[in-house]
Amino acid sequence: IPFVALEARFQGGASLDPEDKRGATSLMAALLDEGTGDLDSRGVTRALEEIAMRMRFDASDDSVSVSARFLTETRAAAIDLLRRSVTEPAFPEEAIERVRAQVLSGIASDSTDPDAVASRTFERLAHPGHPYGGPVEGTEESVSALTRDDLVTAWRGAMARDRLHVAVVGDITPDALATL
Image 1 (cartoon, rainbow, N blue to C red):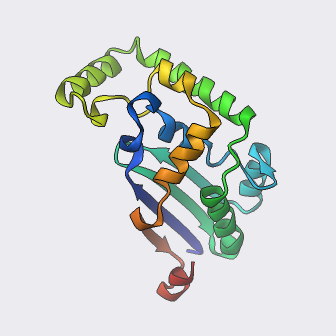
Image 2: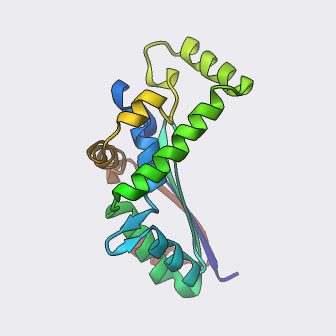
């Protein structure tokens, strides 16, 4: 099948967030596909559609994950877009505010969800004084206070080559993968 699936993890994740900046890594990861270089969010979406690529970023306590799926025939363009999204994110203010509003809406929703409340209570009690005891996405107060500079700091701290693990399957040779 002329298709490649790539999964990458940067060790560290949201556990790297300072206590007063909880949610910075999660918000940063949610913004990686919201613009790079001369491409805004819509430009990235158009580029993904043009090359039939899927790209997703996520943060957990222990990692920032990168998922990409693309056709062999568009591999060069797909890898270029993925590379630019990871290494040259724009973090435009408009996107920050839009995604922040989505995160805050999720936090508000979770505050009335019995499963989410029980899970957060368990994590807080099981890991007192540790980043695992707090929510990956942060709190209403911490997320509301995050600045673009905080997101850039989270990006610089999380996206480190020496903590990168990559797995790739599909239509690619080991030599071609090594070059990528």
